[in-house]
Every structure is written in C-alpha cells, then in structure tokens.
Length: 610
Image 1 (cartoon, helix red, strand yellow):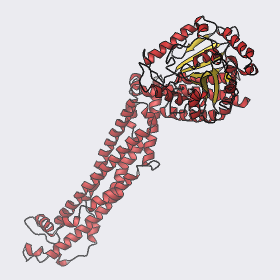
Image 2: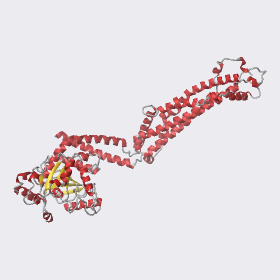
Image 3: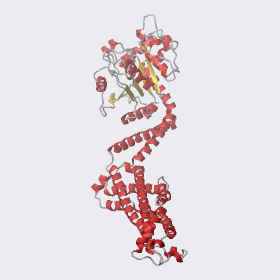
Image 4: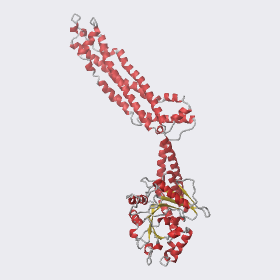
C-alpha cells in the first residue's frame, strides 16, 4: 500500500514541479487523474485541527475568520523510524524546515505574498511536503473554509468565490471529499455536507468526519451521527476529539493529545462500542487505505491518460525539432538536412504529391490559350491594315508576281504580338513557383525552429527562381522571334497558285489591290499565323518547363549551397539562432515527457504486480 501511495506522491511532486498540478483548471492533467483527498468544511469546523492531528504536528496558521486563504496541497511521506522529521515547500526548493513553527510562518508569509496582507483569497495552491515516521503516505488538499457572510475587509463576492474554489476541486471525479462537520451543530446546517451532497449525491466519494464531539451539550451525544442514522454515507463516519484551545496554548504535544483522544472514546460509555474506529490515528490509516483502493481502481484510466499524453508530447517534440549541434560540421549537416527536407517538400508540390503543381498546368491549358485567343488575329488582318502594309511593302514600284514583303510584314506584325502571352505565361509560372516556395517553407517544420535560416532559404529560393525566370523569358521569347525571322516556305508552296493574283500590270496600283485580292492575302496570312500560334502553344510550355519547373526541381538551392560552404562557424551559428520560445518549449516538453515516461514505467510495474 505504501509503495502505491508513495508512487502517486512522487508523480504528484513531479507534476507540481513542472506545472502539471492541482490548481483548478479545465484542462485534464496527470495530477487531475491521480486521486487525492480534499478537506472541506465551514469556518471554525475544526478542519485545521483534524489535519494537524493526522500529521501529528502544529504547523497550520490559526486565528479568527478566514485563516486558510489559499489551497494547501499537503503530501505526507512516511520515513524510517528514528529519522528526523522535516518539511519542504515547492516554492523553496532544497530548503528543509525542521521547526514546524517556521512552517506555519512560511505558510502565512507565502499566503500574504500572493494575496497581500488582506483577507482576500487566491486559488494558487501552496505545496508542502512533510516527511515523518509518524505519518502515513497521503495527499490532502486543505481548502479555505466555507462561509456565509463577508466580514470587514472582504468583498461581498468572497462567499461565492470560496464556494467556487472548493467546487473546482471536489467536482473532479478522482477527488475524495473529506467532509468536516462539528458535532455540536445540526448536520442539516453543515456546509461540508451540503456542498458534498451537491457534487457527490450518491456519497461514493465522500468520507465524513465529526469534530468537537467532546463539546456537545450535556445529555446529548453523536452516536446517531457516527452510526450513520442521522445522515448515511457509503463509508462509516469517523469521530475525532481535537485539542482544546487551552491545550494549544499550553503546547500540549500531539502524542499526548492522541492518547487523550483514545482514552476519551474508550472510556465514554456512549462511544465505547465505536472506539475502534474513532480518533485521528484511525482516520489517517482509514484515509490511506481508502486512497490505496481508489488508486488501484483508477490505474487503468491513469495508464490510458499517460499513454495518450506521451504520444502527444512525442509528436510535439518531434515537431519542435532536435537541439542545435555544437560543432561547425554538425551545424553544416543540420542546415543541409533541413534544406533537403524543404527541397523534398517543394518537389512534392510540383509532382502532385502535395497540392499546387496543378496550377502550373492550368497556365498552359487555360491561361495561355485564352491569352492567344484574345489576340484576335482576324481583326489585326483587317482590309485597311492589309492594304496599308502591302502598299508600303511595294515601295515606289508595284510587285510583279506576289507581294512577298507585304506577306512577311503582315505575318511578322501578327506573330510578334504572341510575345505578350508568352511573357505573361513565364511570369504566371514564376508567381506559382514562388507561392510553392512559401508553402514549402511553412510546411517544413524544421525551418520554424530557426527563423534566420528560414529567411535565408526563402530568399535564396526566390533569387534562384528569379534567375530561372530571366532565362526562361529569354528562351521563350526567342521561340516567337524565330517564327518571325524565318517563315515556313512549304506552307506557301502548297497554296494554289492564281495567275491573276498579281493583277494586270497595265491597271493602276489601286485597281490591282481590290478587296477580293486583299481578302485572299488576309486569309493566307491568317492561316499561317494560326499554324504558328498552334505550334507556339505547344512549344512555349516546353520552354517554360525546361527553364523554370525542371530547373527548380533540379537546382533550386544550388547557389545557396555554394555560398553556404564559404561561411565560418559563427555565421553558421547565426543561421541556427533558434527562437527562444521554441527552445523553452522544447525543454519544457522534454522534462514533461521524462516525467510521464517515468510515471508510465512505474504505474505499469504496479499494475503488473497487482
């Protein structure tokens, strides 16, 4: 039993050290899954005296009004007989208190540090561990006493504030409620019973304690209450007799007080038959035994939570990345490996494994054809424009057989307009490739770890794409210029010859350029330009893919790698200057993961040994 509760205490201490502890929270933690005992009672119900009796030491602040103004998480650890008793606070690590009067002062001082020297309350718990051979292994949470009215110096909301704080603890399904009620008051008015009944109507989690039995009016007793006749709980009521104020003033020690308590129950006729399950010693043993039973029943749920949390922590730790290497070679390797991961993600976008690459195909299949269609060559080859260019091409003398120069100028003026859509296609693909860089940067988890490297990789990739765009634009426009500089003669040779095409040289130049003749020229030129356009519609995407997409897959970071090899260790370190928040988060996750793995191993060992 002691090993099981010691394990829970150990895990709870580790939880508190890492911040996964019992301050009221909506977030489930390992602490929340570990059973503990919350001590609930009204003001002046004897709650503090019960706790001191269980511990066997005077260590709690005393006084009138609200004395407990912050939750006190009290962990009791049984040590070997003959060992010296001591106490430790979580907020004062490595400082041992052997004077329990100093423990009381520190509780008061730490409360004041959080709330000020006022009568305010705070939900931030104080964590205290007591090591003694005279205690049983136990975890108790002492909560502020419930009250019905606010006194001077307290806000009107304090009554509800205290109740909300108490509820936040005792509503947790793994919380055991230790309800303290004075025997010299009607149970119907007990604050502890009232709130316990609301959160635990079946009494499955509630243990009842009657205090001040010795202070009841003469002729009355608490037998009906202790036997569960006045108010039945699933577990038997325990009666305690606390030290009187006179005993406290005389510093009567707990050993003597416990002896008097035993004598009281064994010598009082009304309680003699119940003496075996009365008193603070029995209460401590009963709480420890009950806690062990509850812990055993909760182990499967605890294991499930621990396993789930470990998986989540491992996933987050993986996302945060590994710590930075110390030497230059390690730094260089880390940078190259991160860049490789980025490059792989970028390629996956282009190859369709990840989304985005399909937009490039859309440029070729929709945007480029639509842009070419908008050129409307037939409108460029209007009668007026054809007549003008044919006439200008003849110069001072008319052509003899066919207006070759006119044809060339008409074709050139039409084909050269394809440069616009070609250039636009290059720019559109460049924009998409840049977008994919930003996508790949954001999807490379390792780059989030190093902001400076992320910026450098992004800049290097964009600069590389800019160079590729320039090369692609030059090559793609050359395709258009090639069509302008050399016409496909076979196309014209295959056209049907018309002997009248040149007209009668005896007629004036204006008669020879009649509408029918010009229409034939326009139709011929349009057919040729459409043929060229269809050819470029296929070759422009090839040029763009070859110069931009293919090169982006092959050598996006080549220039960056070349420059990287010239950097010194200090410059490499600057690239791996990690975000301090990420470093802190990784360290915190690593510590928490270590805690949960240790808890997993120990809980599994206990589970297998059952």
